[in-house]
Length: 182
Image (tube, rainbow, N blue to C red):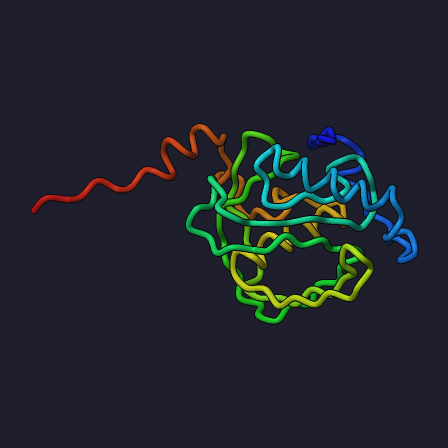
């Protein structure tokens, strides 16, 4: 089932999420929630979705990058379910890139993120998960785990002049520079 995505201003987006009891993960209801979140992520062409974005202040996020139309040049990220994730930064180098968010529709902004991290969590079947991620994969994890803390990418932007509407961003920011003739 496609879930309604909360937009910026809805309280769950600004509320720190609660941990999920491990014995709840294997329940039929929780498994259905995971399926619904994955389906919703696909429906809205997202690369990740956190439970606060579907009005639930719990520590659950899903992510996947596979032949994504908005990120065709990005390496694939397998379908991942993260319950109660803990992020440890491995490389504190900040990389500033464009981000968007299903809860902040039609906008894009440049946000700094750490280059490399390790995330430990419980997976879909409550199994331990440990992932070392770099670059775009690390960005997606940081973006989704920020939602679990009640934060959005706008909170990380050092310069709000680097915020624009998606249509304008696509028109002006993604256009290749014209070749100079000598």
